[in-house]
Length: 167
Image (tube, rainbow, N blue to C red; front, side, top):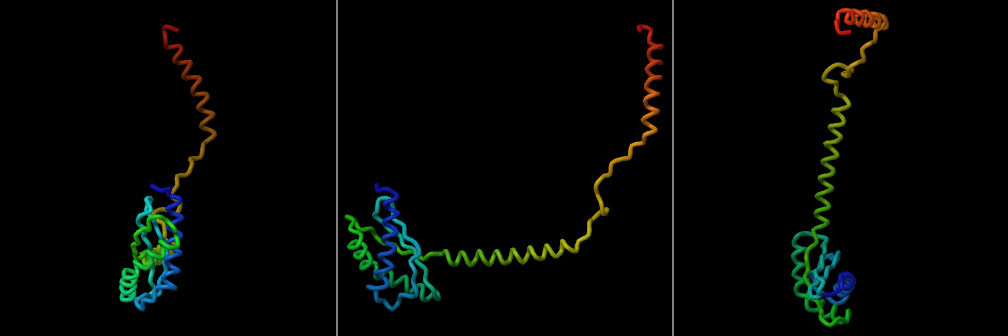
């Protein structure tokens, strides 16, 4: 089991080697406008997965996939020569879905922004459902009532004291 750091470094090196070999050694006319976007190597350094994107139609993508499959042996021998490791990893090519996914996300964000703009326009012209000010207001305190309350409390206490025989 190799170190994950070593696997990551080897993956980066394989990515560069394969991209260079595709540019200089592989002369297949089926190869379209190809970009190697990422490479991943297992921790035991036995298998490498290379992600690629192709600019073009679906037919060009299929042609590029077939060209990569047929050039896999040449690319693997090039990786073996230029890396100098004991066991050369097998190469697997996978079409990278990130550009299509990014386009879908941008379209969804555009639709969401349009809906937000419609809601904001409706909210700007909306009227409140109830009163203009729905909050409760504090009740004004009457000062005269407080003065009477103090005198009433004193007389009530006196009446209770006279009526209680235990006191």
